[in-house]
Image 1 (tube, helix red, strand yellow):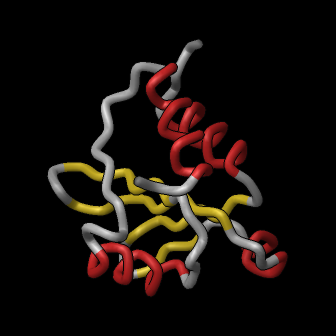
Image 2: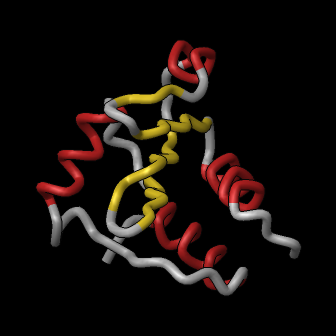
Image 3: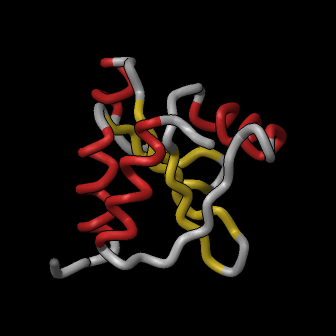
Amino acid sequence: MGCSRCEKLKNQFDDWRLDYDLSYCEMDPTGCDNVESIVDTKNYPVVILESNGEMLEIVYITNSSETLSQGRKQISGILTVPNHSLDGIAIYIKNRLNLKL
């Protein structure tokens, strides 16, 4: 279950020994619709950083050069972080979590 890009990022997180919860859109379409409405994308994977069940950041892939050039934005109190690639998401997460690998 899941797309090849999602599996690749999952494998990267496993290699880094990160703890994470995995959600598949097929099993949680409402949750995915909510995220898609916030960041206006249907590209996956999307990484959500939470604290105490509250969504703090959404890190996602966008094909829009305009969205990339605008950079990070706060939307409804959530920091949205667009990236151009799967590697961009991984690098952001590595830096954001201050991983020393």
